[in-house]
Length: 421
Figure (cartoon, rainbow, N blue to C red):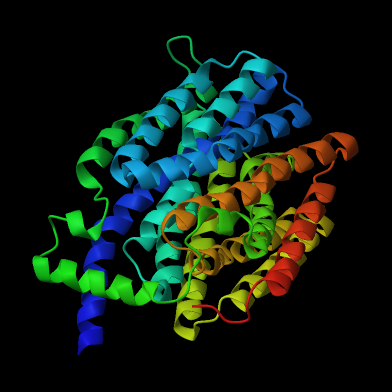
């Protein structure tokens, strides 16, 4: 009976928080990767080589990594409502400013500043979920939140390529893309201030009994031994290994996310609008696979193999796609399998570090793992661009991404416990 009551309460909480958090992350991810769609015309307009574009796309994550830990500590201090609103407002402004890039220098500077502005958003959201959901439910909840990423491709890909066709008031399509996709973040910053609730204890939409029930649920979760000291978290080898695991995951997510439109364009057989639809289609499959896999992880209580198996599946699929580039449709199906594998690793992965950490250590430790991991978000796009310029082919870049995601599985086996709730 009590389990049914708890489940009903968690459904109420997730129904209130998760759709809104998905919307925020949808806008965030779209502003990160819309550079890949802008590149379809921007690179030619500004004379960017593949190396320049890859470095600029990836340099976002250097700014992101440098400010990740302090941003997440600030969220813990000031509360998610105020800090997330600040993040969204500043990244929206800088995303709009991308419309006025003139050359490599302004491209690099604005991408770096965009990373600084957005630093702390994703780990802040992961931390925020620990305030509301106990560990045994977390993989499924993270998957619901993270579905915003493939959805941003499903909806954002055709929308972005549609914006590329705009040409008005002296601005080109890629400039309109940045302006129109940056504005929602600015507007949503004000919605966050009114809608987001910092903790269950301050939720006016919960009854007194529901607040007490939430407190009981979360206290039971906190009974598991955890690291609470920030210093202890930063010297815990397991967190650094987790950072290495996430490094390989982000190489695959962002290497593919930034370059897939250009890889499809390189076949020379599709219009810009068709490219948008072809980029969107795999992520419908990705969303379904990710949710079902994370739900299975929650039901079984197993986390590590739920990271390893899809990672190794993705590695094999990346290798296959490289070998099949001369037959674009077969390569395309291999990419769908690779994307599904990479994304399926994410929800069970985040259940591992969050199960180890509490209080301030959670804020700093989650940000540390995300910081180390997001270095892969820098190297992934850059590696693909380097190999493209060096070999005039995307094959070696796809092989490199496969190698990194294979090592993700190896590190997960070496560094994580066999079972973790």
